[in-house]
Length: 145
Image 1 (cartoon, one colour):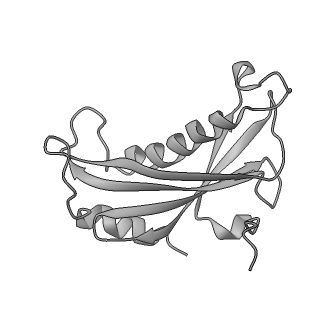
Image 2 (cartoon, one colour):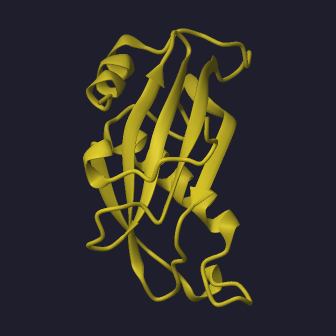
């Protein structure tokens, strides 16, 4: 059995968003630094949550906290490229969701990088896990493949 990840394609995702790279994203090796990909993962997930009306960053009583991430890299990206962040739901639990995220070079069929991003939903004040609200659960289920 191989631990090598299978490179995903556009058909493995449900939503796409353009993300411009910035000059500061490049590192001394002339490509986007690995930590920037995790910023893009946050952007893809949280922008979707906000746009769908499920996250008010200041007021939401129930919020998703990141408990795990993973990223696999296949090819370099560099400023001034615009990448596309892609989103799907890999696993939907009672109080947690694991998102599948892909980073595509524009126009490319296969990911330049891809990963997983897990949120556990908690009540903001108590920080204890709670069930994912039904409306959000339905929206997440629509992102499953």
